[in-house]
Length: 305
Image (cartoon, rainbow, N blue to C red; front, side, top):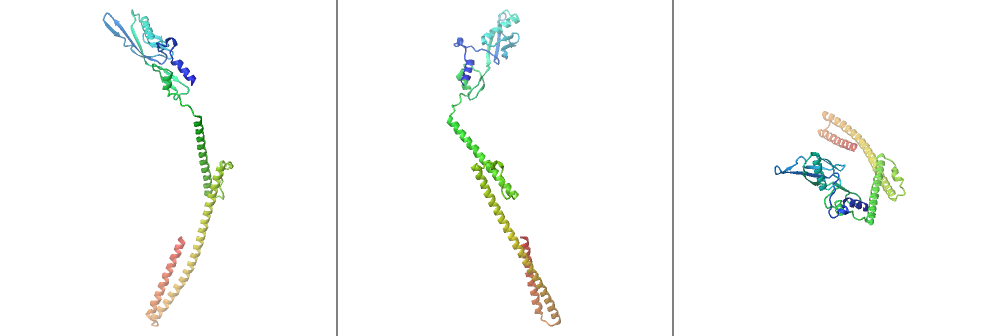
């Protein structure tokens, strides 16, 4: 920082001999406005050189190029000295009997640069009356003094964030390994080498142990559910078989009732039995049919389950 201020001071401070009446020395990138007038006594008027009254820039080589006046070394000159040089060149190049009045004013100062330990180092436009303090202020001033304790706290906080992120990543790796093992129906979890090679790390060991417990619990629960489903299926199959046998028995009963109904009908036709016997036989057959239909429905429902 001291070097930056020293360099800045040398570029901004006026020479000692001219400290009391500082004259800005022109240089490359300075933009100036030239105004040229001439008194013409024969007409009693002031003539303006409009072709030259314009804004010009000092070139990178420190030379100012003007029409009719030619190339004038401007670097290091003040505005008054440059105006005199322009007037002399016009007299010499154009054969004037009297030098015209020339005025030069700066419309845009060349930039200066601030480097070093400041808030915003870089390029800034010069302004009259600028000194080192004002220049540093333009650059945002000096940064606040660093607190070693604060830096240490920031380091600790950053380490904590990194540790938390590492733990979250390890947790996700362990969970993914467990889900992959469950999806593949594996007997155990194949944890990635990134976790297994850190067996000495207590956090990684705890994560793998927790995922292992969850894996075994879920696997045992799934096995229990599968066994229950197998037992239920076996029970339903046995019940369907039993109902099938009952239906067979009922089919036999229906056939027997129908046979009896046919016999009773023959006796009634021969006048050997009363009409009520046929009614009873028909009622018995209807009851057996209803029971048979009910059992068929039960078998169908069990099969759908």
